Image (cartoon, rainbow, N blue to C red; front, side):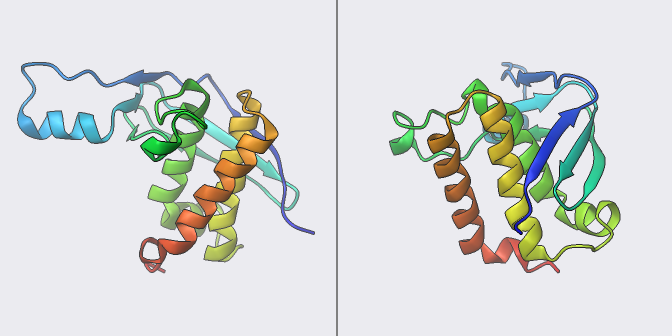
Length: 160
């Protein structure tokens, strides 16, 4: 039986804000804010329960990410990367990918393979966007695209 996501919850509501570029910002800060326009303004504990395991970790105040990586030509069909329905899901997914070594080794204690973890992150993304109101077909397509992109981005997974 394939692993299924039973629940994804937080100890508090994620306070997600857009990072505004100020005229006083130096060029490097402006560049960072353009690349990672979203910021978490509170620390949140994440609880994930699947059909095979339960685990938790904290995303700390100040975490920044770029939103959902949706190519511009799909925006009319799917929505833009800044769509509210995708912000929390993209935050969690990006965090799981950015800190995959920590999550795999420290949180999950090496209980799953890198391939299983990659797939798990896509399932978590799908679960959250469905909870946010995305219809099943759209959620499945988005999750599949995220998973396929990760499969072809093998360089990001060679650190193990």
